[in-house]
Length: 361
Image (cartoon, rainbow, N blue to C red):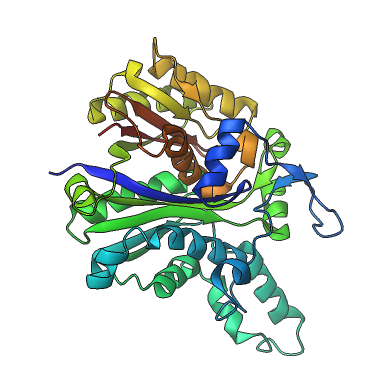
């Protein structure tokens, strides 16, 4: 079976919209977290990492965006960042392009605002019907497909901080099952007052030390042959995506170590070849165990670590998708070279762990 590669990517972070701001921000080691205006954002966090000056109207135009919520606008904009890359093939066979998009719960703000209006209005049905689509989980994926005329399979994935890795895994299955010729896959997350309070009350005390962030990242996955035929550079081969779970309170380290070792073996990558590592991070005991597990799985290796959450905040559902974009940003425009590999990891308090290995093609 032909190797599947990542041949293009698009990212939106607190550094700005597009790939260049992410590359530059990481190269400079710049922190994108800033103090919040408490008069605008009535949230328990003092600092956050927001996409600067982002509005749907600014990046998508004024037509058709009046009722579009923020997470949908971020997703549509990120998908649009790859539209030019596949314009020729898409124009001829748009039904062969699939979209797999990860999300937390859709837009928490839209869901809670719509519910509140139905409870506080004079009548329960006195709500703005045009905003109802924003309350369903697949709104961002559906709108992205409509906006960019993507007619292939359309999938929404939700899996907490592992969402980006789960989306990539599903994209591989879609392609290998013969359902599409190429896949746009990634995840998006918005910052909102409602999400901030849910994260604050739902997380452990140590989680609250990490500021929240927002953003989106989308990857183009296709065969190496198709990428070459279209004149696109194979930036990285998708070596393996793996997941595991554990039940013991101290089982994370062993589970993730085994997960990484399995992924490396499947990808045919030696631990010493791993040049870039991007953990979920975020501080606290969970992050320390995650990094120790990676160290255990890479004996003798001296990779370059990219702790993205320290720079752009905790981006929840978009986190691992942005970590994938981060290692591609670090690899440069020519991608991973022969004998080079990158590792992205993610962990969750409910006992799930996951990782992806990208390799030079």
